[in-house]
Length: 394
Image 1: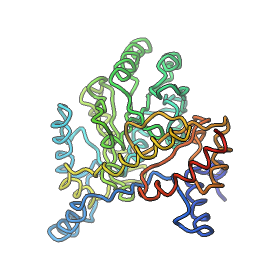
Image 2: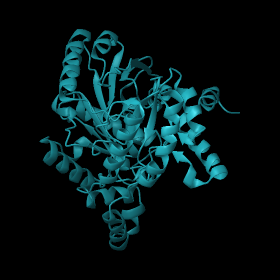
Image 3: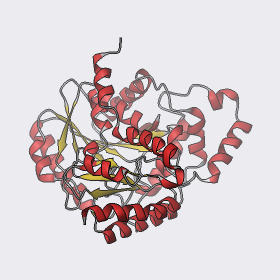
Image 4: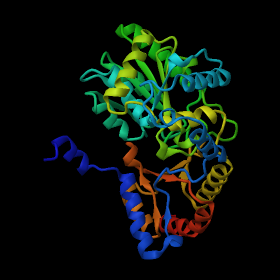
């Protein structure tokens, strides 16, 4: 018999996945060329050629166990050292392999952090709109998400409400920048103000409050906008990084967690994370992909297509009468629904074979997420459908 907890999750299954399945149905009816699926954040820009070459080189030159065997639960030491050196060069940090734990993508990284730090009824604050799987990751370990209302002017965090909702039960604050679903990058001024509040509250409550920065989109920033590196501003920081978007490797499930040097009891935390990596069932990050990352540490995907898509979609939708904040990073555009009911708006869009994800799926009703990590030709073909949708409301 299926457990009650899973029965509840089945009844509230991912809207994003539901839209993806809806897209497949529409394709079977109208044909692929006539369906415009903007629902899923699945990178369309290929991984750099060096990735495939690295895989071939590793398989050809390393032993079976080196390529396919178990690794240290924290990851291959040489890989972690390579990553720490790269971070030190980029951000003027002072990390070593003992600050880095290799994980099975960012989701696994978040789970081992929550496994390590949360006791029952501890609270984790995050800022709407946010990736709703956060709710489940926190609940997995007895914690509770506390959501801060969205600041729909510019989608920087609402720090006044944040300050008021911090409590003695707050164990961590979870941020995501560049943000899914808005594409907004939290500014340095925002980060400084947020961390000042956290430092004051740590003193008031007499215990650590961890700041967790979820950064799968760090490398996807446009117009030379800087993405602040959080360990510079706050000592009790975890960085969660994934190569899913930065190298277009979402199915390979490879990333890492950084434990700040200045975090209190950081060595104990590191040990606990390593154990958590094992006992939640990940055991270790994929060994082959760890070795690939080591060889391709300086590689990035070409953002030209994403930037072209961003400008084409944003400029066109604004011209048609829609409202949104122009994305600064990631590959999502968060469009204001012309009617209060975002789900109803998504249903209307489907009449024109346009598929979006309602903002209520990110705890921000009244908006929809449009993922532009798609073929540029599809965006060009979809513009007439967007125009017809706009004519319904404007």
